[in-house]
Length: 155
Length: 83
Image (cartoon, rainbow over all chains, first blue to last red; front, side, top):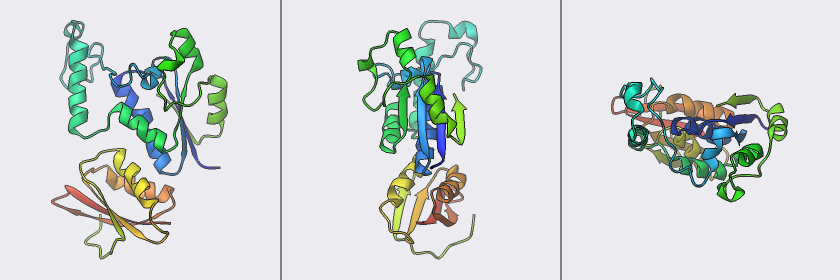
């Protein structure tokens, strides 16, 4: 059996969408099997209405490259500004966009599983899930896959 | 990083300007079209590739032959023999 990487993607911010997709696409290039289970806000990474415009918030985020006091970060427009800044850095370093990375993952055989429970709970239609995604599933199917994984990550 | 390596590659892959994970992703795609025993040269500018390319080669069953640097460490050449 091939080495396997199993990831749970639970966050839907721009910064947290990259690690699961980068790790899974790299694992596939290293001849590993890789699968990502998108749950809770992580579902936004495979939501066609959202995945091209994920955001990063400056409020409560001391890691912003330009320090933004929380009282400023709470002002309207600050999240958009921080997102614009991060997208600028992403573009400058030639990092693929999230939709591009999804394509890379799909082409290299990475499994992309949306969490059925999250779809139901958040009232998201199955039609809103990107075509690249595999079948929806739940904790049982993910654990069955992860049971045979050498690396399991919760992101 | 080794000194100048006298290797004649069968193919050259240019990944200059690309960063993680694309050099490894493109290397995997490119080496798939080579025959076993053929040598691919990967030319890139991502310093992270110095660790990533040898690790990828080892895990994907290829042989990492070595690397060289030019332009004061701005450009890297990696040589991988397809397994």
